[in-house]
Length: 414
Image (cartoon, rainbow, N blue to C red; front, top):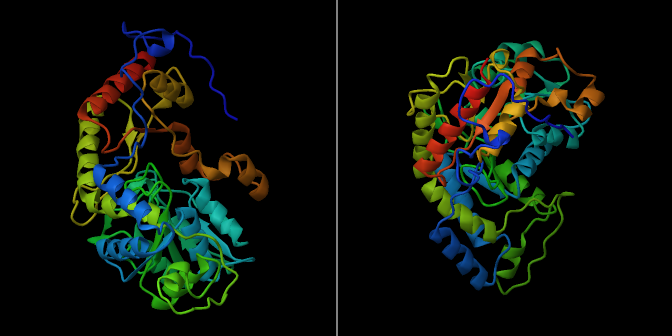
């Protein structure tokens, strides 16, 4: 467990006392990271589902799948219990297993790499681009071996990878591409929604995501055969699910076709998703407005760096799940963790996305990795912090985040 040392009062160059030193916090109450925005429409739909007598996987989930596929612009969508489950199933149906290698990024949540390991394959970490924080295509090609079976890019923070370059590499080497779009619902790449590529693309609807079902995920694809297989695998490998069996009077046996898993999404959760999806474009507009407020406020602060963000929103749109700042540690008198701790004491729910996975104890030990292996990812990992960004926040909340960040930054700037 990582610990944060108490912050020393030395090198303070402002008269405004930090909350960590006994001063008044910048915000009157904690501004949560990723607070979901749930309206009366979602609540009423959930209540209606509860009253219907059917809360498992059924008609609401099917409706959610259809509407999500239409929104993304793809033929099929398969709802599952999490993005982790989506990744695992996508790797599994792609025939990836022991002896295979899957190229991916170290700048992601551990679920991405765990899914690779759960099918028995070996994750191969490739360093990232310093501007986008996504996979560097040139480095990807250099890591391909005869054992490489797939590329698994993660659209970090909501910004698409250079999928044209990665797809070209994949075709050249006859590799599968599986996209981790956990951050990227609503994002656009090259004029099309992320998830419409035809690749197996995996989305997350976790509580803090742009669209939430509390827990949940989705796989988008164009292949009808794979879609049918995914539907069976998500529910124990059975040929017919419970809703199809019980909505009719005749007896239907459900044969077990595969040794499947338990990854189905329920109608209870899909009731949330139906209305979250209707509101998604409005939510994205709010995220963009709040991000612009941050941009304007932090432009004057020397040394900060930000993830690249496209300006042509019609053709390339950042989904803005995360608003990420890289600190100039050489010109601060505290570490990044101490800086984040000071922000939290100001009632600003800052977070860290992410510690580069090859620096985590398990992966260090298992794959003999450590400092110096992936220098760009390590550099970002040491400096990154994420500020609250959600349509559930008010403009006053954003102003308080700005005030608190400037207060902490000014105090600890050398």
